[in-house]
Image (cartoon, rainbow, N blue to C red; front, side):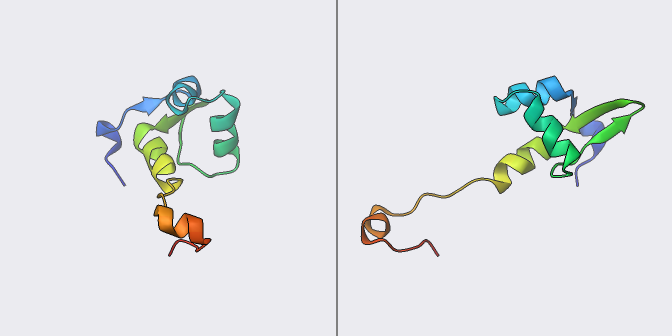
Length: 75
């Protein structure tokens, strides 16, 4: 986990902009507890590192062309 002092806290709108989505998507991630967030009084903030971790977790590596054409599954 990163030090929150060095990790910018983003609003839901800023998180949506970084993800290039509507505000509804980061709100759903928060509601489903699929992303780390911080409660600041009644406000919700998302550490920038949490968004980067979420993006990295969804990264799908490409398969070699030979595997695609032969119908093999990636290891």
